[in-house]
Image 1 (spheres, helix red, strand yellow):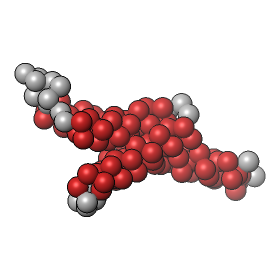
Image 2: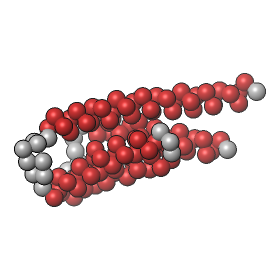
Image 3: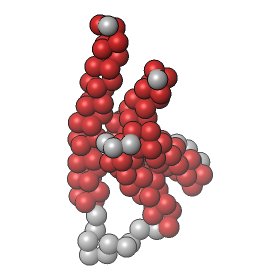
Image 4: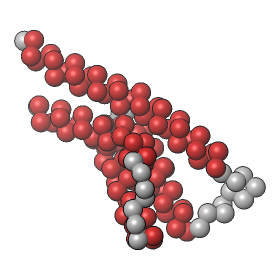
Length: 123
């Protein structure tokens, strides 16, 4: 009986870690987004930049928000947003974006997907 409760409590702990990190990640992304925004010309982004922004940060943030209620869907949307961002950036520039920061900001949404997968395997 004790072993049946451990996976559930571990799942609950990881779920709350993902939720707390998603709040922090979304908050930081919004600070970056609005801190860099030029409100005198709000639509001054190129087509390439709009496509990239659609995947990251917007797609990733939507995935993290949905992950609070539907972990599988949230994890999937976060994953698609992150992979789409990397793919489009590689197509446009020929190189992937540098550094681990895009992955780190997406981690909470990816954790939602991991929780969903682990719970499906248990049932």
